[in-house]
Image 1 (spheres, one colour):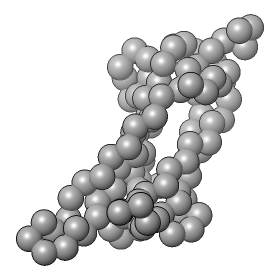
Image 2 (image 1 turned 180 degrees about the vertical axis):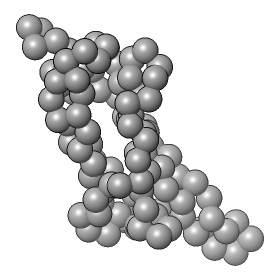
Image 3 (image 1 turned 90 degrees about the vertical axis):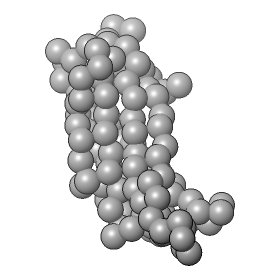
Length: 103
């Protein structure tokens, strides 16, 4: 698990894949939500940057007053699975630890 000091800007990244092939989510829109260790939402955005097919990143900032602990980063998009399946959500989660500058 990666550790980051609170009060800094953090870069989070994702690779969207379908059948192990990089693919963009529908509308090239990737949603990212960051949930703080106390269960509250830090950010909820559709403003991720597309770097290349299926590759996206997003920068978010933590304040020096944000709680320490484990933060959940959830990425979401939708893919056309074809046929009768249509569009289905694809989700990926990661965790990071926010530590104090003295840790």
